[in-house]
Structure formats: C-alpha cells, structure tokens
Image (cartoon, rainbow over all chains, first blue to last red; front, side):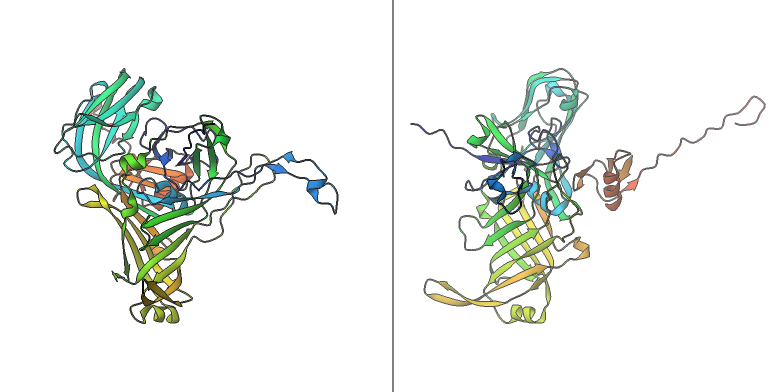
Length: 442
Length: 66
C-alpha cells in the first residue's frame, strides 16, 4: 500500500479583530490591494515535529454528587476551551517572523528608506519598464489607482529574461486598486528590470517606486494583535484543506542563541493559545523562505554590555513574555480574552565564560547593565546594509550566579550560568525592544 | 480626519489591531475610530485643521464692501 505524500507547512497572519470571521480569507502580505497588506499571510518554516493540537470541545456535566462525572452522563458538545494548542519551533527569518514579533510586543513603528526605482503614472495595462532602474537591491512598490476591473491579471517582474516574481491583482474596483509590493529585492544596474502584464486590465494607472530597506522598531504596547495560523497538510483537515486556527495569542516566545549550535545559531519557539480550528481549502504554499530569503543559520551575533563589546557569552536563552492570555467564558460566542494585568517581561539565562570578577560583582551588587544583542546576516537587504535584528535590554539584572565548568575535548575552563531579568525602562517603553532591518514595509 | 507627523514622511505605526499608514507625513483616520485617534495622538501626530477659505471682499454698487 502506497503512503500519501507527507507535506506540512504553516502560514500566519495578524487578525483585524479578535477571532474575526472567515480566517482563511486573505492574500499574501504583499498583495496590498487584493486582500493582503497588514493582515496578509506570511509563510514561516517550522520544525515538522511541531503541531498545533486542537482540544476536545466536549463538556461532561456532573449529575450526581460524589460520582466521577464521566461515568454518569454522556458528553455534550460545548464551547471550545481556548487553551494552549501547541508550540512551534522555527528558525528566525527576517520578514517571515515579523507578525510573531508584532503579536509578542504589540507595537511597531516602521520607517522605509526610499530607493531610486521610479516609474511615473502610466496606463496599468501597458506597464513595461522603469524610468529609473534601481542601482542596488530594492523592493518594488506598485500603486494602482483608478482601475475598475481586471480579469486574472498579474504583474510579472522580469530580469535577465526570467520571470523572477508574479504579483496577483484583484478582479474588481475594490481589489484592483491599492499598493502591491515585491517580496524580492531587485537591482537593475546590470540587467534591467522589466514588467509584463498578463490577463485583462480594462483601465487604471500604476506608479512604481522603490524601497531600499525598512527599519521596524517593536516596543511593548498596551494591546497585542491576535493571529490566524494555517496548518496545512494534516489529514484531519480532509483532502485539499488546511486547519485554520483563529484567535491565536502568544503568551511567551523563547529565543535560543547558542554559539556552539551549528544547526541554527538562532532559533525561536512560540507558545500558542488559540481557538478550535476550522477547515477550509488550503492556500498555496510557495516556500517563500527558499525563494526570497536565504537560510539564516548564518546569523552572526555580537553583544555589548554598557556599550562595550561583551565576549563572555557562550549561549543565551531569552524568553519574551507578553503574558497575553485567553480566558474561558461560560458558553456562546463571547470572546475569551480579558484585560491583561501581568507585566510584559524579558527573562532568560546566560551561559558565559567569565573573564574576571565583573559579572560576579554585578550579581552580588545587584547592578543593572545595558545589554544589546545584535544578530547580523551575511546577506544584504540593500548595498552594504545587512538583514539584522537588535534586541535591547537596557536594564538587565542578574540572579543566582552558578559556577560551572565548560569542557571542550580535554580542556576545561571556568564557566557560569546566570539567569537574568529585564527591568522596565520608560524611554524603551518596556523591559526591552527589538529593531529589525529587512524588506518588509507594512 | 487627517493627522500630520512632523518627523515621519512615510511608514507605519501599529499597536494592537490599529494600523496607521503614513504617506507624505500624513495619515487618514476615520472620525469614529477612537483607537486610531488615540494612537495617532500618542505617536506625535497633530490633527490637520482645514482653514476656512478667506472671505473675499467685493465692491458693492454703493461704493462699500461686503
């Protein structure tokens, strides 16, 4: 007996409101005019052992005092407990992890750095090239206006005779007009970037511009947006379908930075709370990670302590805890979330090879230190600007300095592990903030 | 309603479910979207107040103005 093909993927997106209807209805983030944009889909590669696991929706009423309730009454279908549905472990990718950061921190301020790519307003149907080609890698931005309809229309981005990317356009006035982005970065200095429009476009105009890179600063907000997670490839969803988990929140996400881990220098693991999934037709999985973003096991990390290079750290586990929760309600369609009283926290543990008595003195003196952790990719967003992530913990305090020994082959060095806690700092709006530099403008 | 951001030409400010898209230093906010109004004001946006068109005085037939 032949086994069916096993393939599994997840996509995620921000919801426009908690547990919004039709969670499957959205386009990719870059299709701004056609159901994507700020609430569009992102593909996130995850370890395949990770599954979102729905819970039983059954209630066993207790009908007789003193008896185990499951023995005296048949189960009845009740409300679905919003509880932990699992966790996903994933490598940290720029762009693709953006909505995870949004769901954890709550607030983001994005600033694009404008590029030089330009095409003045031209008839949408005849878009063919750029007036000014990008001289370095740039995201291309297509702004379509005044179009009333299109039929199966796409913009093909062509370079060196090859279609590098295809952007799907909507079919009516409400979905054609809007802002569309390329996922990839394009440099037209050697091979010019050209376009072709496929399908039927009846009217409208398009302008094209470029973005070199986007700087996204995530800070702790009062509210966090919830997520929809599409889990594809499960046979339980039935053929051709995916499970769509709506109303998902992330109470904690752990980053594991291990200088010694050759498989992935920086990995993340997010705990997911959410609602019962609904099954609907699966979206197409295009493997954006492979097509537009490189394997990022090659992050290099550097730390500073009070602004100076800090070479003692061998590994760090960092837990970012928004402590967002879902709370069960009696029944019906009430949203099971409440006011969050807990404080956003950044905690973790550092494994270090101490150079002297400084960290031990910090621990004994309850001193706070300003620690920055920068991850830099060998791949460039634009020219000499790499994909990067900067995690700032401006007031880090240490606890329980535990002396250990680190053995490598036959050599042994003095080591230590130190749990840490980030303390609220007003000019960072919290105990920590994250700055990413990547290609995501929205 | 429009809010003007002195130091932000373009980009996005978002908190929770509220997303402000800033184009040419300004973003459009619906009159009844209290979350967006709060976020715009907290983020340093200033409400753009449309000035009433200046009144043009015309000569009247009796030599005065109105």
